[in-house]
Length: 354
Image (cartoon, rainbow, N blue to C red):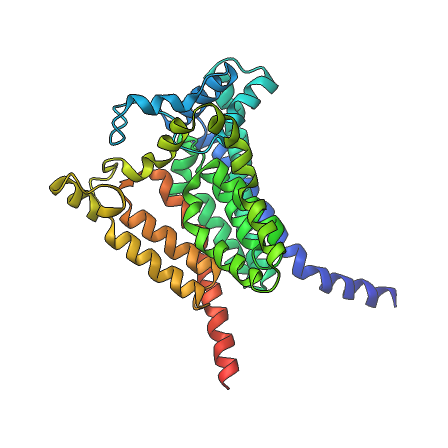
C-alpha cells in the first residue's frame, strides 16, 4: 500500500518537478553567463548614466526635466536628458541614498544585480505562462532560453538600460489582464512609470475597461484610477513645480528627428528629410495605420493579448522614427507566447465548428 502511494505521489509530482528542474538549470546558466561574461562594461556614456545623473539632480531637489528647454525638440544635441516618467530617476535617487552610493561606478554595480534579477524574472514569467497553459515542456524551456540568450537581451544587459524592468511589469500585467484586473491595471501603471513604450498596449486595457464599464461602471472607473495612480503620483511634484518641462520631455519621442544605429532609416525618416515640416504623427502614416488595424483585430477578439503585443511591438520596431538596440527586447518574450496563443485559438475554433 505504501509503495503504491509513493509511486502515485511520484507520478503526480513528476509533471511539476521535471519542468522546474530544467528551468532551474536554465536560470543558473543565465545568471552565470551574465555575471561572468556580459555584466562587465562600465556603462558610462550609455543612457543609464543619464538616468543616474537625473536621479542625483532629484536628490539635490533640482528639476531634471528642465534640460529639455535647452533643445529645439528635434535633436538632443549630443546631450542625454530625461524623456521618461520619473520612476527610474526616483529609483536611482532612492537606491543611492539607501545604499550610500556616491558615484556612478558604485551605483551601477548595484543596479547590474537588480537588472539581472528582472532579466531572469522575465524568463520566469515566460516559462510560467507557458506551463500554466499546459504548453509542451520543450516550448516552456525554449521560450525562456530564447529570451535569456538571444543577442538583443545580451546587448541590453551590456548597456544596462531600463527596458527590461519595464517589460517585466508589462508581461506580469498582461498575464493577469482579464482575470485579476485590479493587479493588472496597477502593474501596467508601474511599467509605464519606468518606460512608456508599453503605452502602445493602452488600447488593449481600454478595451477591457470598456467591457467592464458596460456592466459595472464604478468598478471600471476604479480600474482606470488604479492604472494612472502610480504615474500620476510620481508626476505630481513636477506638474506642480513646472508642468511645461515634464510635458515637453515626455512628448520629445514624438517630435524628435530620425535617428538609429543600423543604417536602415524608417519610412518616416525619408519623409521628414524630404519635407522637414512633416514631424511627429504627420510623418508616420503607415505606423499609425498598421497599429490601428491590429487594435481593431484585438477589439474584435481576432487576436489574443500576447499576439497583439507581438504585432504591436514589431510594428514599433520596424516603423518607428528612431531605432536603438534596447527596442528589440520588447517583442522577443511574445514570440512563443503568441504562437501558442494562436494555435490554441485555432484548435478551439476547429473544435467549435465540428
